[in-house]
Image 1 (cartoon, rainbow, N blue to C red):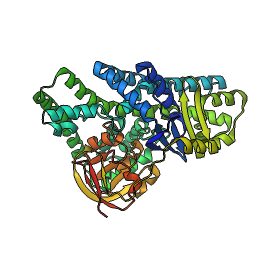
Image 2 (spheres, rainbow, N blue to C red):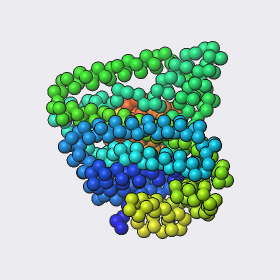
Image 3 (cartoon, one colour):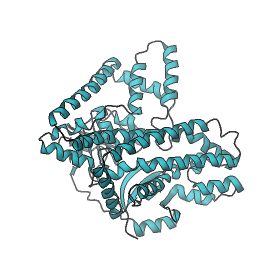
Length: 477
């Protein structure tokens, strides 16, 4: 077996739903371009470390690029499939809310299996973008930079890759600003109730928790304390959105691109939007399926967290016979390794077996703790100095203060309260479509992504200079 490398981290994660990613990645890439791309992972103490084998991903990336070069509409059609399948998940999750309470155990597992199967099908298309935007071998951003540099217009890269559509998280923020203008307490309470029903899942990601009405009341109080003018912010956002669309139109007219080049620009911009949109659709579906998981837990006398550490065959067996391996669940909550092979099925190791496999097969790269300069990619330009806070998970957000520089391995929607306070963002994860790059454009915050081991080397309280014009982060003291 070839050695596995680490390439991305996420936090607040259990086996469900991430066991579906390797299934969708392998089946989708095998079907679409006849090469099974693998994405095993480690979960340790509620955090996931995604793994890859470089040759496997490089071949998959090359085949995907070949499909797009031969026919750019291949990717735009994949975007349409993402939307269709994601909306199907929302519909299924909503439908099941009225089913699980009275369902027999066999029916309950049928609903669970249906959700899993449909979500795997969604991942078959949804994971094309991470493969396309993979590490040093990105495609859309590299091609667009080449086109713009050739025409002496590379300064327009960020403009041309900024979506003209709002994510659900952005819609939530804009609606909250509208609510902040309401002065009648009874009217505000009713509107907050509606707002919560619509957006409580916005920061849910894989397993929440969903936010409640009090969260949004606190968010309104925070707006007042920071003396933010809702009216001015709403007007500024509307003007910026219209301005972006018009500027994009003007720049494209001036560039005189070929049909193929215009398609690449469109794909680059759409990829930023659809990666976030796909994740939001799935986040919403995971929120909707939580009651079904809780019902399974109630019948098996398990916590929600324990249910999320089971695989489908184990749930079926438990619902059918009542048999469970509680020690295995406990071991998985501490450490597990997971991989999937369509011909052999899942490989799930826990405890000492997982540790031995990881030590033997996963490369643990040594860090240079003395490095003082990190080079990444500009996601949004600007240059600032400030004190950093390392924020990788929601339970670390209490450290964040207005005007700090947020440094993370990667960001996700559940870190948005901290991100809004940041005057700059720096992440280890890179790529045109990573979450930090998307919110950087939305919030217009200087941001550098793909900045090496920055979150592992730097410490809370360090003073750094973020030169997002050049993609450089320097430790000052």
